Amino acid sequence: MHYLVFLLLLQAICFSPDWQLSTNVVVLADETFTRTPPSSSRVKDNKSRQSRRETPDDNDTDISAPQISALFVTRKPRDIFEGVRAAVSNIIRGSFYGVTGLLASPLTGGLGGGISGFLMGAVTGVLLGVSMPLMGFILSVYQLARGAISTPEAVKGFLDCKLFDELTRTWQEYSLDGDLEEIKSEIKAEKSQTNTSSRRKVKDTEYYDLLGLQIDASSSEIRAAYRKKAREVHPDKVDKSMREAAEQKFREISAAYQTLSDPNHRARYDNSGVRSDGDSESALDPYVFFAVLFGSEHVEPYVGELSIASTFDSLLRLSRRGENAASFESIEDFKSAVGWNVHVLKTRKRETEIAIHLRTRVNDYVEGFLTLGAYKDSCYEEASTIAKEASGARYLLAIGPAMVAEANYFLGYRKSIIKKWRGPVGNLKRKMLKLRRKASMYKSILHTAKESLGIISSECPDNLEQDGRVSMACLSNTVPLILEMAWTINYLDITSTLSGACKKLFYDDNVSSKEERLRRAEAVHILGTQFYLVGLQKAGNATAPSSIDEIKDRASAAFAESVKRGNEE
Image 1 (cartoon, rainbow, N blue to C red):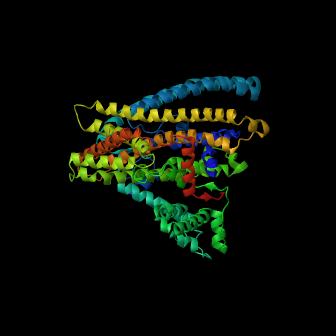
Image 2: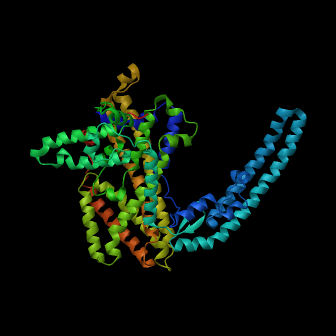
Image 3: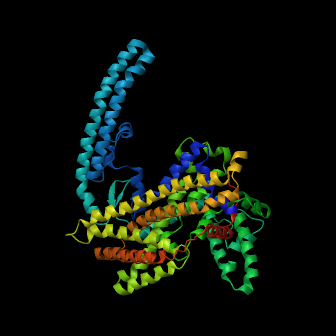
């Protein structure tokens, strides 16, 4: 039943009286699953990019003094539409500041200086009431002009498949391979910083040897090595004659991972060779748990590591902080505590790796090695293979429409000059898909909370009346609701991730011609269509459990393949 503790963690936090922690969790979760793909490109010359970071664009510094930029929108608009948004925002801000100054200045002056202070405050208020709206209007006109001037460049950059760099406010080419190299460099730098103090002698290397690791391996390397070894020696994947030996090996690998994945246990093992047998109440590793619970080996290249795992990992870290969980002074402190910057880096890496996989997957069709019919057949066969696995049909229905929407959006603006209307239509459909899945997620969260409270209050009234606690047996009945809610989160996560991955694939400058870009998008459209069609066909033969007991069994199986992680400070 340990898996129930993990699955119900989100409910526990949602109903926590600690309002600050709950608020921070909601903000973080919203940013996690509704993020927009980063539009800043990875230019080929990283040194040039770094120099631009240190020296802002001259076009922005002429009017963007710190005092003004803190009050109004002064950054260079990307196009006329962004210029209009900036103009409207500046007018509203100027009016608000003016009215506030007009009303507040006399009051604050009177409270501090009596009648003379009131008069001085009134004069100041009148000046603010006139100057601030005027300043807002002037900046609005200025931003509209800048947006209009930037529009031709924006249209050209968009049609040339360049990406707008939010930092330098310029249109630049994007390199998929260059982006991956930059991510690897950042990860390497992070590892170097993390392991600066870890170059030490260890008394026993048995656990490292079991997982095939160096003694200075990072936490991500330890997790990856465990998952790889666990697949190789899992008792269910060997002959019955070798099952007993495989079970023993699996236990040894799990013990090694349980020790090395926890900083405190690892330090004790390194210093003294003392092994930690763990605690039966230790928290699960969310990455392993969700990979098994929702995972499909063949679909992993298209979805990567689900964000729900990293989010639950962050929630687990917060739950272990106890009373210190609400000691954050700002949301930035909260993000730092849960490793938000690392999460953003992982998201970039995830999208880039999916884009590279898609590039490899569609290459035979793009290069003309496969005919249209042969390529469709290969896509259908792959989709059929995925559909045979647990939750395969659900993954297909999540992946297929997202791919089709992104391909339609890209092709609509570029494939046909006559039918340019397909671009805005494709963009609208793409946004509506995300909106529907986002609405479905929020609806599912509310439904889960409501139904769970109903189940608890109706089936466990005695427990609530005695000590306010609910038994695990009662809470277990809410597991199906939680898993369905998790699937709606996965749908939105996959949609957002594929949006970023497809954008990187389509805008990658490693192409020989515009035609190659179009064929990439066409190939992704075909692949997504076949995934969706097979998903619809197999949806009737639901692989999802039909009873509470079956769902509990699946969660228990996922728990058995995951390992318990020790508490982290």
